[in-house]
Image (tube, rainbow, N blue to C red; front, side, top):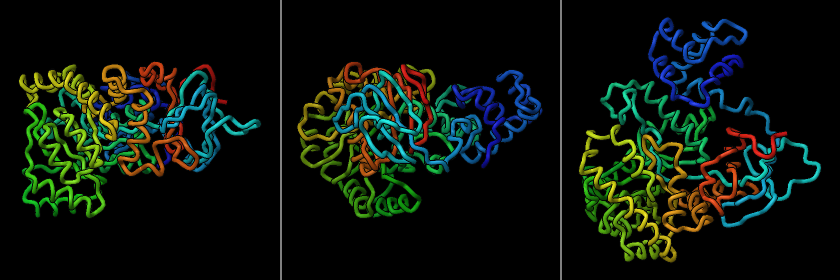
Length: 476
């Protein structure tokens, strides 16, 4: 869909707070007559070659239409203006961390089209566009293997549930906003385990019509209540037919309910065995050591959370090649910080919040144990929920500053190691010739100060620049 330049500019007024404005939320469900003064009040009396009212009407109509198809004009302004032109781009900075442990000083990443052509010194006489980022660090786009991108706070400031009265348009706008915030924070790929709504968001981002991270999703989950081993196999095949990229299993209770094992050995064996047989990975929610043991013995691909992991279980995981995706603190701190928005919904009660508060030091200790476990593959998965989108890197900061992981190892867990865990290593996770051009940069050096990850100054995904902030250098 072609978007007129003047409408791009008008809608671009809200780009910095995309999809967060009350005006946009109200306008998406309002009539033109009532929405026009709301838009004008929110954005000011602006004219771009036609009347403010006409533009407001057009922008409103676009919001309605694009939201219903997972697009929003407020993020259309962030889309590349031309996908057809494959220009050569150089991103230069004082250092390049390649995601696999290598660090190159005073280097550039040369990008042609959607892929990296070369990493090294900027060639003399280079004729393409140069982004000189000065004293920044270039990194591969980050990969979060566990993020719930469609979870959000509703129009009344509460955690969204299916029966809270929010419209489908409001829900999709919120999901698009979460995706945008995630991408702008330097996370260019996520795995969502998972909601049915993920599919449309995944597909529209993949087409290049909405700015956001590429998404892999389970489209839902299975648990001890999902049926017999035979029924579980059938449901896993159905998930694959529906377009799921991965299978999500709940093998234990929530941490808010104690985290005890729930699925039987027969159920887990059947589920992970069927997924493996049809070429799908399995992510297993498991807090207790017993639930983790069952998942490892069943040959499941990856364990999420593992808050009660013992050294013995971690060693067993290392021996069997089971991937570990623990959380250092973002998810628990986010729940506690936003308690009023969650409390009273399901198991978000006094007991549940007490459990999450006690899990904070436990989670950090588990990561210390995981770091000390020889041969264990640990990936970056935040479990980002409503309130945490765009703050994913806080979990990496926690791993380094509170759990003692080495900065380069933490960065690898969010780049090359995460890409391998998702079977994407052929195209993502490292800065190397032939890889997809997912390139980010942060101000400073995260090896010396991991909080540099909060200071994102450049984001490229698939060769398209979505964020560039002035540093010591500038684009030329």
